[in-house]
Image (tube, rainbow, N blue to C red; front, side):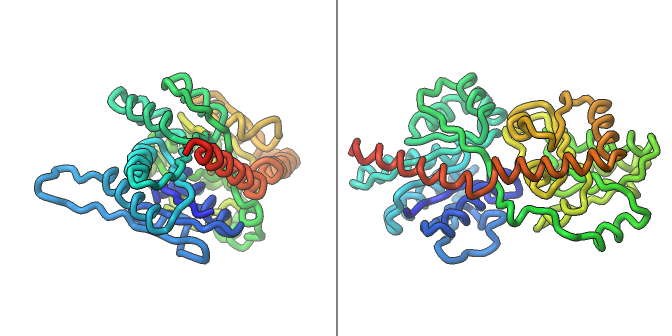
Length: 381
């Protein structure tokens, strides 16, 4: 198939999943056309079967706020028409599904029919989408899509609870390449950071307020007060990075915290971790935690959103009440002070990632879903 993929090309779960999905589909013989305002994160460079079409947003004196949505619509029409795409797969209901629906209508007026699959990732539903000013647009865009998927059952329920959605929603979870994400021998790296044999705690996020990076520093501070020899690595960047740095200084732990910024490949950092922490206030799936689990790192997560589905019945992680610093600290302390428990949880985490969320298990689900959406459209034309 010839598939157009649109996503936000930034550091974050939806962009990563869209990029990895495109790469996996291309490796399976499909022709993939990314349509975005810049090359998606994790795509790195265009390779065989992968094409990139940049959306340019021109400015005019008349328009105080240039419209990315309209520029995206025009680019979608252009790419579908000239590349003869079989399907558009857009990540996020707004504005991507909205632009795709308009593009489909324009193309239909020209005798061209292309189905739209919309994948809901979370923020478009749980935060932005529930802004009253966006509800009608989100609802319309989802209902007008030819196929809709969500990355967790939690997100499917959340969508149905807050929007009058009539479309079926297929749950297709996020995934990773577990041949890439696995624990590597990076002992030299760990010795450089931890010359006295300290344990390593890691947090990876885009440092938005909802990620609660400050909670990670508070837990780390408690662990140091309890006498644990541990270092903290914080990976990523965003609006909460500076406040988190200030907190580490105020608590007197800054010298044992490394702010590493955006890192690629992150699996090399995860390979020296003893525990991963995700105290998020909202998480529809938890891709960063899955990457850690695939690298054999026990994940300590908030008991919210799609995180219970990620951890499942495995012993590869533990769930704590949202915002309960005591509970997060106690869980981290237990893992970091019991080598046998840590090893058992690390093995369980790896097994959970490989057996449930490997790319070769999930991508065929997308392929069969594309086929069903396209076949349904063909019967209607």
